[in-house]
Image 1 (cartoon, rainbow over the protein chains, first blue to last red):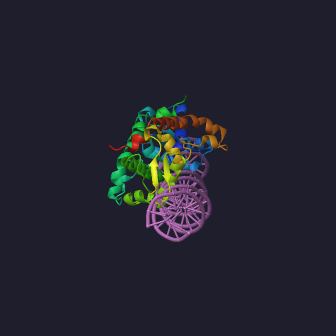
Image 2 (image 1 turned 90 degrees about the vertical axis):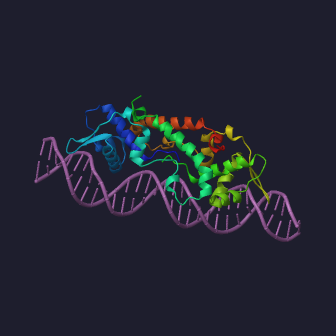
Image 3 (image 1 turned 60 degrees about the horizontal axis):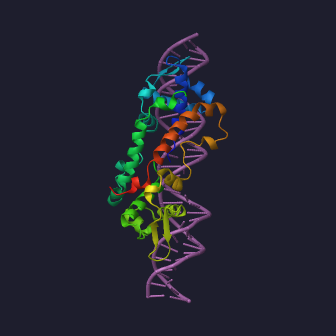
Length: 134
Length: 134
DNA sequence: ATAAATACGACCTATTTGGTCCTGTATATT
DNA sequence: AATATACAGGACCAAATAGGTCGTATTTAT
């Protein structure tokens, strides 16, 4: 529990490298995958998610690659996680319609407290806070 | 990702009910399992973890059960999670000895930042903050 | 034309989580 | 003493999630 997934990890690696290279230059998946010894295909898919979400911009063809499209300091980590992993939430109470009444009553509040805390925290951390160079 | 597990959930349910019943009275696993429609065996194991960690105290035999042994407001959520789930951490960098040098260099810092943030947060939340009645 | 790059769905494998079963031990009650 | 009840805990299975691979299409610089 409370672990980030590989996809998130790989995305953070990619983005921090892209930030180092500057806004205009293009970085290919191959380049990042080789340099960091991470599976090409998986990183490729992850980058595609970021492209769909307009976090990065894709340029096809030889010499192509990705470049940053949004300012990482304006992207909340909650959004970032959700782009990659889908809707997050400590618990799926709301979708869990076969949940017994008595049970939801006694736990929704405590769970919701954890949920709220963690969401609030990641709402206040930007992608740049994580990927910026030290 | 970032979800609490069932075991943690069940433990929170159990503890909040025990808090409601007061410090001296005993609560059996059967009672909690039935009332909340959660699997008896799994809850039983989870309670055993809490008992080993001296969070609760077990009384065997008929009319037996568990009672709180420590003040929930003195138990950090980080400890609580670790009692139930084992050592937590957003990433197992340190154990991952076959990790490539170049890779660990470029990401250890960002990942560590997330790790630190979440740990710090749950260090500042007590079990009681979660399980106390509203 | 060709090669290099992204786009993306289908699919398989490994790991983690959730849950069950069985046996043992302690103890209150009769 | 016998019995029923409750915790203790290992072994094991099932379901869900995460991690990774493959194949094919599309775009575009050279």
